[in-house]
Length: 351
Image 1 (tube, rainbow, N blue to C red):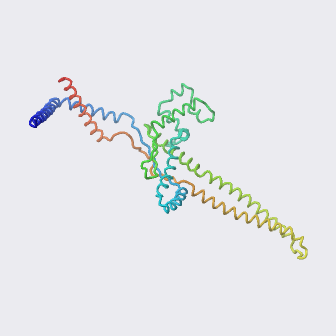
Image 2: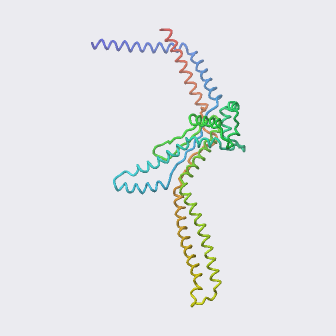
Image 3: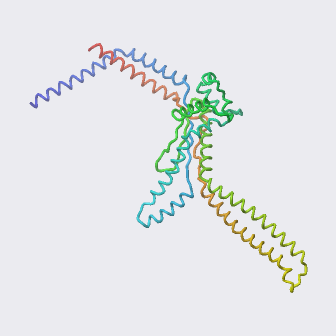
């Protein structure tokens, strides 16, 4: 039984070796066809790589941090440490919450629409990003048939057609061009990308989107503290005006009584009233000034830190292969395709 299995394995192995030899001899006899096919595919690969419009990749990476939230979480983590709880979970949750917020902002329709309706400049010429995007996507004829012009989007006049076209553009951008991700779970670094065949559009859209979203995020995070600071500042100005007026009244009364009679108490009443009013206004002014300084510190600490690490610069990285890489890939692809074609043709003939 064992001898029979050994003989069967020898026959199978020898058959496989003979099949491989036969296949190699067949390919050797068709070496001219393989070389022609390889050169043809190589030529097509080079032509395809240099004739088509490449896709340009615009990338911006930045780190997001919030000193106020980190400080409050740090205080909480110190208490958690005493209780035997891992404090890093609080810090990770805080950072993740901020990153999730700003990532969703980058994907929101309103931020993308604002970016489309923003303007930029290239080589001293200003242009609307919406106009450049429409021309790059070759949508001008379609929009002209609908009776819509680019200038229509600069007016505040509402239109269902305008809203519908903008909505379609936003969907295309989110599906095909916009990239928002977090490269590593352990860091608070965010990467925002925009890919397009128009190099200028890719760079300007990426830069404007980052600027608009980050500005909106900072204003939103500091809205409450900023409003509180403005209110306190108005109160300081109002109390300062009252204090200046009371000081002037006190000085006027004091000037009108150059030599007061110490036995006449009623003559001193206006002066004492003005003095009490001035001292009260002064005390209020000092207290509000303290509140203003505390509000400034709170507002400053609540402001998120968004530090740009890398930003897109010309020339942008694109999808076009380098010449050496094109030669290698074209040669390998052409050789393999020719061999596969001959092998399949041989199998179909023998079968």
